[in-house]
Length: 219
Ligand SMILES: C[S@@+](CC[C@H](N)C(=O)[O-])C[C@H]1O[C@@H](n2cnc3c(N)ncnc32)[C@H](O)[C@@H]1O
Image 1 (cartoon, rainbow, N blue to C red):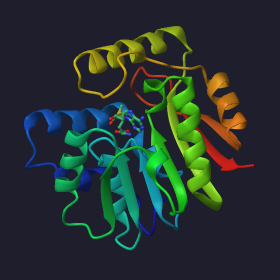
Image 2 (cartoon, rainbow, N blue to C red):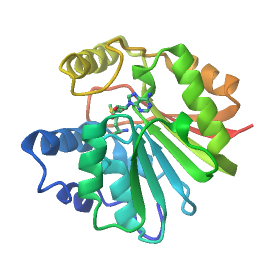
Image 3 (cartoon, protein in one colour):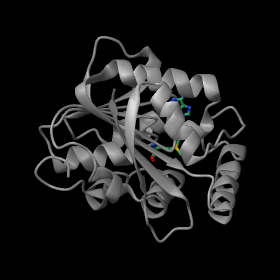
């Protein structure tokens, strides 16, 4: 649980009421298709949070609305998404959205770092560089919460890959144009090589996606 109340995705979603239909649909789809409340429940209850590849900022804003005293930074390289996130979160003094990549952050420290459905967009070297930056920015005893889609079972992987092909192909998700999904075992190995020990959770959800959550701590 985050702060004194659980992250509130209903409140967070209403913050996008003034945004164009495309953004509202995107945010609704994220809320429906990913087990965001179950992921939010794994975030440690105190300390600053960094949301890497925060997109339109829904997850950050759900955490921010649950605990006004908690500092949250969302960062994403998409200028359009960060602009929408900043508009939606304008009323919150505890959340800040930045355009950029985690590798550019220096001199800050976070109790928790969240990376939700981002790694599949990045080739191997970029995955490693993102995780190295997370390792560097985590406070001692901090937690990395990493969500990916597994490549098993094959039919669920097919659904996830097809959807993401459509999203990147249509330019709705920023990336290099190629997809770089990895199996659960490969991501676990990448985390170990990046200096993390992870618990693995295969999240059950009504959607046909192989949602996998790594709750990792620096070794
Ligand atoms: C599928 S969206 C997930 C957004 C958000 N984390 C969520 O769960 O709703 C993937 C996000 O990764 C961002 N992204 C692309 N390249 C990135 C990079 N090198 N570092 C961080 N984020 C990146 C995209 O702009 C996009 O917003």
